Amino acid sequence: MKEVLKSYKYRIEPNAEQKILLNKHFGSVRYVYNYFLNERKNQYRETKKSDNYVAQANKLTKLKKEENTIWLKEINSQTLQQTLKNLEAAYLNFFRGNAEFPSFKSKRSKNSFRVPQYITVEEGKIRVPKFNDGIKLVKHREFKGEIRQCTFSKDCRNQYFVSILVATTHEQLPQTGKSVGVDLGIKDFAITSDGTKYKNHRYTKRYERELKVAQQHLSRKQKASHQSERQRLKVARIHEKISNSRKDTLHKISTKLVRSYDLICLEDLNVKGMVKNHKLAKHISDCGWSMFVSMLEYKINWNDKQIVRINRFFPSSKTCNKCGWIKTDLKLDDREWVCESCGCEHDRDVNAAKNILTEGISLLSSGTGEYTDGDDVSRSNTLLSVKSEAPESLAQG
Image 1 (cartoon, rainbow, N blue to C red):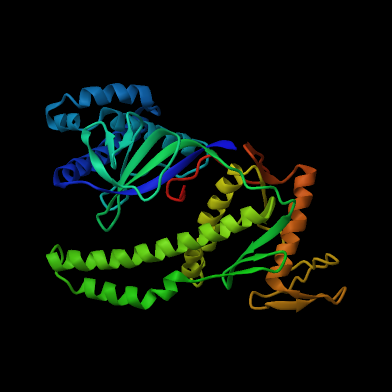
Image 2 (cartoon, helix red, strand yellow):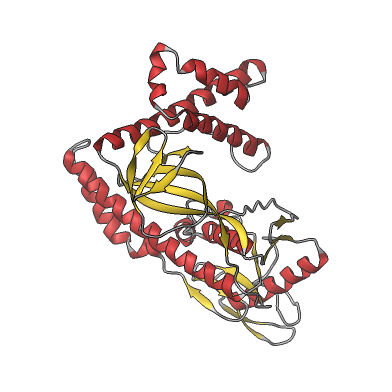
């Protein structure tokens, strides 16, 4: 058993009055974030310095007393303070090289706000400050543990959700003593060193025609009309179907790999750079490689197993896994090739997975690789940050 943080996402059914208050929270959080981000940018432009969280928290108290912004008093004060902490974290991540410079939030971006404490779930309702009567919770599964915080959100279909972060114990999977190399691709989503191939379902392509027709109908509707809103929700429903289908598949594959192997080796792919190839950008984005790796990382961490990520420039596909000879003229459409040194016939992807496993074990044994072992994080060529809790957008409890 291991102490971990798990996020449980539930749909909520607020009444009309609660919907208004939730939307006020979404708007106020966005306003406070943008207001103090703009202030920081102006301060730095003029003095080359800007306020930290403590200074801005003091200014927030004064802002709530001003006549033009007195409506901020309707909002949970800790939620507004948490917004300033999020802004501070965004700046720290930027200066540490982990993220881009913070940008302003728009109404079209994700609507969400966080409640850090005073949260109770009982009698089918969740109670937080400003919502003392409780919001109806569609509790499709139970959770055990101490509630640490919760995040309310609204999706593009105007559905409301809450993600509850819980400190709980996780029953770890048994050790298998097995290792595997994984090559991520487009033709097949994942290929393992033992020859298993996981199909790429291409969900975007599967629903492409349905989505195209729905978007065409939307473009013909009068903007801001009732019919336009109904059609927009139909388009959003298709996008949601694609997203949920992809996420479900990635969870199943990542769970199976973590359940079957103690050591997983894979390439550190530069997905952001790869999508600049406009011929393959849609197919690469549809795969969800980054989300898959994130799922692997937190599930491996929960179960005290290991993941090794090798250098993205390692020629895994071109190298013969038997003798080490490198076929320098290997093309992307060459799915099978024969080693000119030893005569061994190779399936391109399986060969790559075998080489990834060999290189991963070599890096791990030499201590120069990038790997995660339980709660420990080592680094080589790039930074790898692994937390003991699952991201709220990924965790399924």
